[in-house]
Image 1 (tube, rainbow, N blue to C red):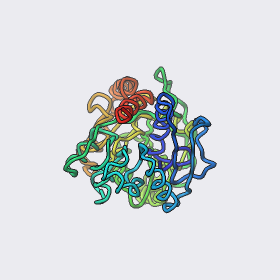
Image 2 (image 1 turned 90 degrees about the vertical axis):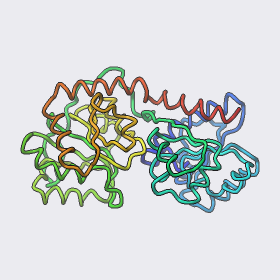
Image 3 (image 1 turned 180 degrees about the vertical axis):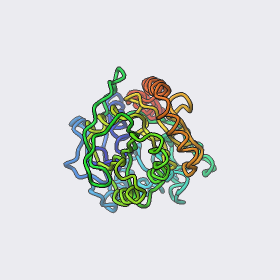
Image 4 (image 1 turned 120 degrees about the vertical axis):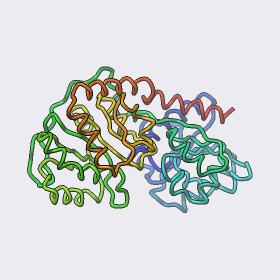
Length: 369
């Protein structure tokens, strides 16, 4: 795996659901389990792992990880990879059927920006688990043959599953893009995601483009962009240049508790992204019964039921469509509430951590037979 404990991001969150499944399977079948963590050190061993599970961290050293994988491959194990590029050292073993490999496909690296070697690895794999039906369909368009199934994600285990719709939380004061402290009100639109100069398809810039129009109609509306990234200051500068800096907030990376407070207190979750293989943050918002805005032809299609739990738009760069979706939610609190409640029910019916762990269990158990 790339990492689970000290590694941020969606893949690490999924790994925190995968690990207990592998522990359960190994325990039931009385076989050994070894966890190799590419980005982490030995000290990052997840505390949830039983003592009999071997754990080794490689601190980002590709050569050491490759050597370890080749050594393990000689014993003909079943290898489960959280990212296709980690499996490259065992490609020869996989091609001749010496080892069984399971690959988890998380997003566009599985189809849009796929390397030739990654395509071979998917085609040689015993099983490919795609994080959504959307990802699986895109892979099928690019790859002529592979054994793939959709394995839709679930809420990360550290996000406490709310058993009842939580009450709206009072939000703390934050510094806006102008550097001034303001209280957050009752019409906060939230986006949680990394802000990186090379990844500008999550919707931050598109939301800023329509925000002056939204603010003219809804003067108390506020926009919160939570998350890390080197593009934060560029986004703040863009907000200032458009004269909307006093209603845009960029608090940076937040703890799970602070994030849950934001989800509980926001009005709606808005991420018109075109780079999601699934979109775990939609589930985090649904856990607090918030309506969601996303895009068609994206992983959001698997999560958001259009017109039921939120709104999907065709093109994130269509300001009329995006502004229309925001205006519709802000202008109809009852509709927003209804969508949020249905999203809460949808999460509990399909996308909890328990649902994901059972899906993984069933698929990996089929390989172990």
